[in-house]
Image 1 (cartoon, rainbow, N blue to C red):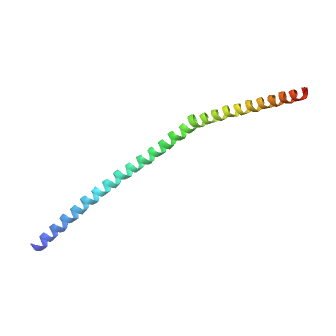
Image 2: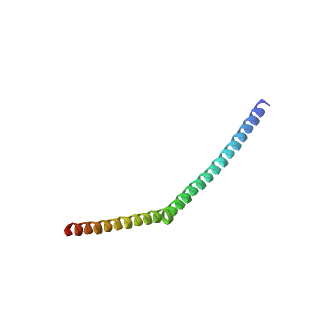
Image 3: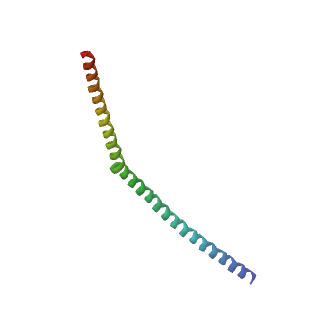
Length: 93
């Protein structure tokens, strides 16, 4: 009888270990799925950010640079005209 109760106890422990192993396996599977989803979300976020950069931010910066370039050219032209007028006025004296 003693051996029978020990065998039953061993079976019970074995069953509990199998339950825990199954539980851990399910938890690992769930965590793996969550990790894959998180990685996909990161890629999507990166993709959205790069799209924002390429479609909005970079063109906006390029436009601002073009505007600044135009202002610099205009200022340079005004300086050339001013310098020309100053020289002409200096020649007249």
